[in-house]
Image 1 (spheres, rainbow, N blue to C red):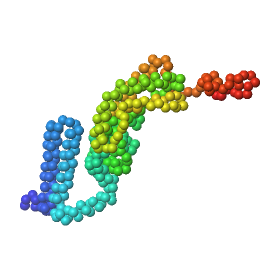
Image 2 (image 1 turned 180 degrees about the vertical axis):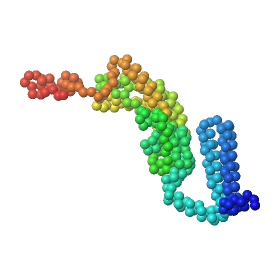
Image 3 (image 1 turned 90 degrees about the horizontal axis):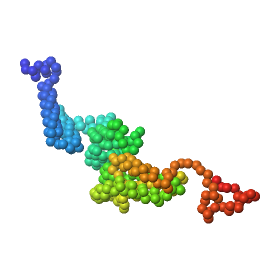
Image 4 (image 1 turned 90 degrees about the vertical axis):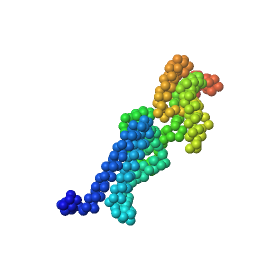
Length: 318
């Protein structure tokens, strides 16, 4: 009695099933060796981290697909039986595993449509961050914002189901144009020389983002080949507006999404230093004061001062 007959007699496993088990183990071993040596060759020959990531995921996905197909063909004897088997399994999975199936469909959508890619800075729903991994069921971002001010990392890794791409809008900070508009509001008092302050702000912002605007123009030309993006002006500008506490001077400029806080920091430091040296420029902030039109208003808008003499009936307007 050989080993196969002994197993069939004592373990009640037929020789046909034994062969299928052996073939399955050989397939698993062969695919594991293929994956192992394939990854070693990739890590040795590919130096770019992003390219290595794609090659590694490609080999993993290929081996998983081959494993399902080959093992399925070993254990299902006829093509008709195979189709029936997968049909029944698919119907059951569609009912019981709606969310996982939606996640797999989301993974396919991400790979084909590419709403975002590895390294992109995105926002989906309430979560924002840099994409660091994309898998069958979920993608992973390195979170920014939340309790951290501006667009800097919190240190948390957020895993988001792929199915979210069908339910939530996605904002991509780096795809296409690769630059974002940022605004800094500087408020000065009504008594300040706001024209001088505006000139200073224009000079400051030009020194920090002038080169960036030239780069942005090239990026815009590239992005216009894929998206209908059109801007008439890419250079920095300072807008003027009157608000309750004074004159609002808003700096608008282009910046790299990952350098928004850095450029803001440099601009503010220079503005604070220069404004401190100006005797005719003061920052505005919420305050309260009593304003006497008869004493402080312009000559043509003041009330008749005789109205405030003894016997006059008109009182100063606060």
